[in-house]
Amino acid sequence: MVLICTFVAVITNTFLMNVLLINGSPHIHGCTYTALMEVAGALEENGIGTRIFHLGSQPISGCLGCVKCAQTGLCFMDDVVNEFLEISGNYDGFVFGSPVHYASASGMISSFMDRVFYCKNRRFALKPAAAIVSCRRGGASAAVDRLNKYFTISNMPIVSSQYWNMVHGNTPDEVRQDLEGMQIMRTLGRNMAWLLHCIDAGKKADVPLPATEKRIVTNFIR
Image 1 (tube, helix red, strand yellow):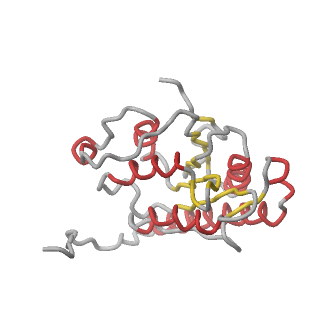
Image 2 (cartoon, helix red, strand yellow; image 1 turned 45 degrees about the horizontal axis):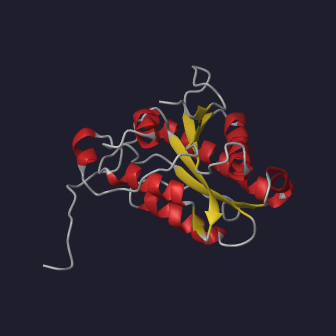
């Protein structure tokens, strides 16, 4: 299997907490990557290790609803989804990035996240997450809303910024010229770093985790 992960910072003892940033664009060093790198820079400046995980340019199948992952913890389709699932437990937070395609997240990252979050487990619970998008002009807020829904169903605190998490531009150079967008990314990185440090401080102070109940699932048709 081809290694498709690009390191920003190798996880070492230098960083006690680490964030995985997922590039949901087929362009490895494109606009989405440029925005993610700005977030990563702010995280590292505030003591959080980072790594970019590129989904690649190969097609990613959508979820088939076979529930095999509930038994094994992995998808029966052995691809980039399983690569992510196998390393996700090593990270304390996540940033999912996507280009905007037809006023929504890319089909690639949508299929990826459908399968990643379909498995009903607690691997992501209480880990901060954020979604960022890059677009040429419009549809960004709808794409952000699409991605945030995975976090709100998984007990994940959502990290925000001073404005919606988006950058504008048709090329990486144009994205870097979006001064407000770049500032939004840096603010997001600092906010996530602050939240991670707060969570770490709570653990050290033995602040108990939220109580959990046995899950209740109801259907509207009986």
